[in-house]
Length: 349
Image 1 (cartoon, rainbow, N blue to C red):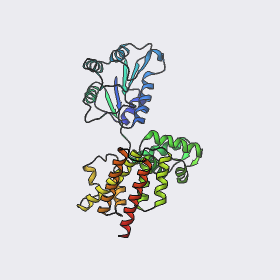
Image 2 (spheres, rainbow, N blue to C red):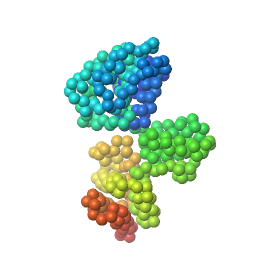
Image 3 (cartoon, helix red, strand yellow):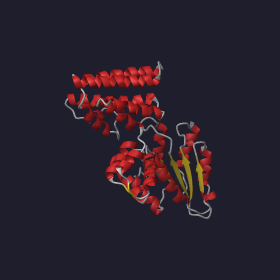
Image 4 (cartoon, one colour):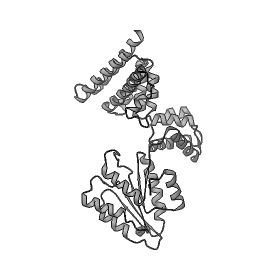
C-alpha cells in the first residue's frame, strides 16, 4: 500500500479497517502521538490487554518485537504491538535484516504500529529510514504528519475552544499562532490556559495578550521591530525580559540575525527586479514564508548600506559571544545600542 493521508488514517481508525503494519512519522509530533494513541487504542480493543497489547520503546531488540508480533491474540480478533522511536539508524546489519523480514511478514492477527513521537528523520540523508519506509509502503502504510498551515491551525484552535465552552474568533486564533508559532502542543497548552481563565464566553485579544507566552522567535522579532523604529525604551525592555526569562544570548542573537538576514535577502531580491518571495526558491523557508512578508514590510524603512552595517554589528556580537570575551549581557546591550544608532542615522541621513 502507498502512503496514506491523515484523513484516510482517521477513516481506518473509525471503521476499524486496519492494515497489519503502520509507520507514523513527521514534523508535527503532537499529531504523531495523537493518532498513534487513537490507532493503538482501537486496534488493541479492551479484552485481555495484558495479552493483546504490547508496547516497546527504543531499547527493544528486534527479536523481542518479533516474538510479540508473532504471538496469537487471546480470545480476540487481533492484537496490537506498538513500537515508539525505534533507533533504525543504530541497527547493525543483522538486526536490520531481521527488521526487514519482520515488516514483510506481519501476520493477519496483528496490527504492528511504529511511530516517532520524539525521534527526528533527516529525509534527505537517512538512508536506513528511507529503506524502512519503502518496505512499509509495500507491506502496510505510512503516514507523514507535517506541520499545519496558519489557516488549519486557526481552525483547530477555534474548534478546540468551542469544545471547552469558549468562543475564539479566527482573528484571535491567528493572534495566538503569531505569538506561539506552529507547534500544536504549545498552541493547545496555551489554549487550555486561556479557557481555564475565561471559563466560558469569548476569548478576547486583551486576554490573549495578557496570558499567552510568546515564543522566542516572536519576542526577538518584536525586539527587531523596536530597534528599526528607534524605540530605545521598548528595545531594552524586551532585551531585559529575555534575560529575566533566562533565554540564551546565543539563541537570541541567532533569531535576531535571521530577521536582519531576511530583510537583506528581500531587499537584494527587490533591487534585482524579483519579488520578495524569491529567496524562498534559494533558501529554506518551507512553512516560514511569512518571514519574507514581514521582512518586506520592515525593510522598506531601511537602505542596503544600513542593513550591511547592521549585519556587520551582528557578526561582531556573534564572535564576541562565542569566544566568551566579556559579560554576555553587556555584549547584547552594546549590540542593541549599535543597531539603534545605525537605524537613527538612517532617519537623519
